[in-house]
Length: 264
Image (tube, rainbow, N blue to C red; front, side, top):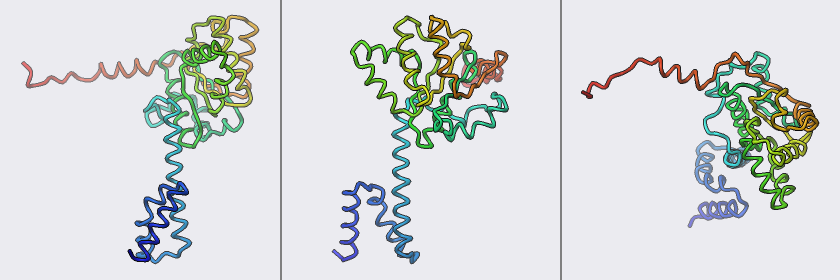
């Protein structure tokens, strides 16, 4: 084996031992490219390190995406931003970048079913993941069930700690909780735990004046609203706004009927 080949194998092995998988994989090609272009040693090393860093970033984002449970495809690529008030459209770059997360602020999306609030919440979540943020998307009834099970097993504090690892929790459809006292209590505990520490994105078909349907007790309702509305961005999908699902169905119905010439 030549001295160069022996050197490559040694470097490749050391890269693996140091857990630098990208550098170990691209080493030979990078060496050939550096020799062909007569690159200085410092440039060659910098190029290798940049590829390793990008590889790590890609693996981290993929891991965050799997952990997030975000609905695939619900991104800004297929979201009609024109449905949003102009004020919110101007804020979207900051929301996608995650500036609100640094300040432990919340995003509250209100609107009738099908108007796009869940899609918007998920799209923001996808953008946050792409920026390296840890996100969890969960229907509220599932989160409440998860907390109830933990409480019965005397594991509520540990479960809250697990959820605290997510910088942003997206609570989808908070208005669909069954609203028993036990459910109300664990949901309120969760909201209180994240208050001014971690961010929430909440979607709801119930405006604040109707949140007594969730929390029942007036004092608890007021306290819950106070915690989520303090330091928050409120996005309202007006009641005159049509359902995205209904609009899509209407478009399908308007398409001309194409007959298969091979039939009949």
